Amino acid sequence: MPLDPAPGPAPLDPAPGPAPVGPAAAPPPPPVRFWPVDDLPALDPDPFLDELLRDEPVTRIRLPYGEGHAWLVTRYEDVRFVTSDPRFSRERVAGRAVTTMRPVPVASQTAGLQYIDPPRHTLLRRVVARAFTGRSMARLRPLAEHRAAELLDGMARAGAPADLMEHLHGPFPIALIRDFLGVDEKDWHRWAATGEALLSAGAASEDRAREAARATRTRIAELLRSRREQPREDLAGVLARATATGEITDDEAVSLAIAVQVSGGHAVRNNSGSMMYALLTHPGHLDRLRREPELLPRAVEELFRYVPHRNGVGIPRIATEDVEVGGRLVRAGDVVYNSYVAANRDPGVFPDPDALDFDRSNGPHLAFGHGPHHCLAAVMARMEAEVVIGSVLARFPGIRLAVRPEEVEFQRRGLIRGPTALPVTW
Image 1 (tube, rainbow, N blue to C red):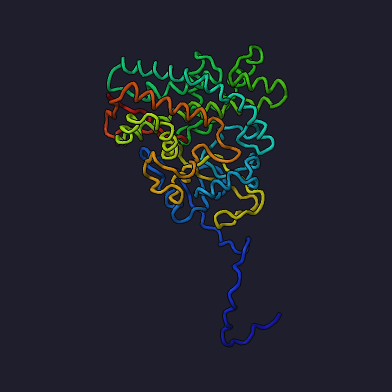
Image 2: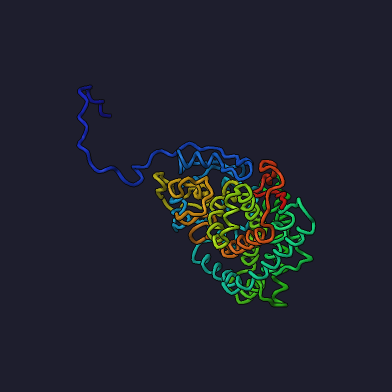
């Protein structure tokens, strides 16, 4: 074993050269932080995400359920990178015990869009897209406008004050997704109840969540069987035909229908309710929409960016090889989450991100995701938001909150944020 060299004068610094690149240049990984994902008031942004955006946009976290830790990516460009780069796989999440928000996955890990990668993912998206055509949305919009008008007429008859969640935001998206999916109205109350339990984060026990998942899948499987016997031009009919021809499996069809049910019912209800709360607490913006109804589509895009539509994070990805993200080295096999909510408040892309600004001309928001897993139902969600807001302003031009903003209750321990009630007067 060689001896240490005798002490002597310190060597001169070497001449400057190119900075090291690749894994050797990556700093040591940050400490793992526990993120309990607590309930937040109204539409307040998550202070944990604000801190990360400012100080540590690529960090490591541990969530309330599951095992181990994961990377969390919050900056806009980093989120776009992770969600579009094929080296980050959804498929490899299936079967792994990862740190997570839920004791039970909402979607099946063995079938459906959520846990697969291209090319199979591309095929499944193509099947579902047959139901989300411009023609189908053009057919659905007049029905949506008629349904919204009926519901608001009912609220007017009930008199002020009234709960906008009860009269509009609750029944409206449920009626539309019921028609779109093809569920009989008399059966929908059972579907809605299990859908709520499926998306409960901490209020439901693990056994209850598993039972809700089983019940939802059983009902959708029954619906698909009935469509094979009695075909119709609805989403269930599209999926039933695709299973009959062997394009997709029965399990994949069930998982696809669940994804549409969740996004089209529960998520739209809460997101549209949050949008209306945002407008009612920004009376200047509400007045502007009354004066400039042509501004509505642009206003809806800004509301999608502004509203923190969910708590925590969704489905992670697994790195298939070593990848550098935002100056951090993510190793092959590491779990990676991204936060669309944080990315939509990135001040490097959206100046003054906590302001509601209908005149923004920045990059597109990420409320519907990015890359191959971008939400297929985005076209329908946009249409519903425009119909809801436009219908309310046309029917009740003097609408305003019937209570103080801080008295509006928001749901607790849910994955999707939104008001439980929205008392208004006019």
